[in-house]
Amino acid sequence: MSVRLRLTRVGGKKDPIWRVVVADQRSPRDGRVIETVGRYNPQTQPSTIVLDEDRVRAWLARGAQPTGTVRKLLRTQGISS
Image 1: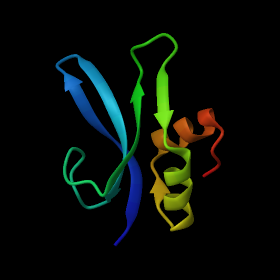
Image 2: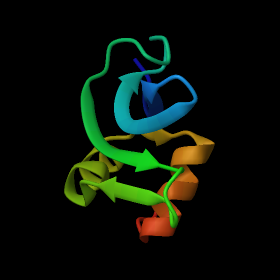
Image 3: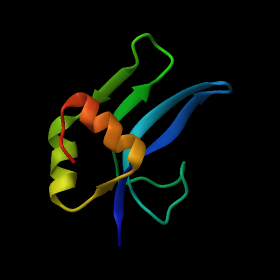
Image 4: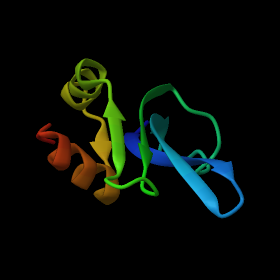
């Protein structure tokens, strides 16, 4: 089973807010998740990025692979992937 750190969409129509979650890569984008480790709101100035750094590092140590967008968010927060 391959686990990924990725985004899942929440919020209203034309008002997206994204959660950073740990999920099986085979589950759908807004489907079942293992754990929620943060949130991302691109509509604020500047963008709001809130991550549970300890949990993210723990999942990366276990072999979870971040998607490209999540990798950029991690780099912005100073967490190496």
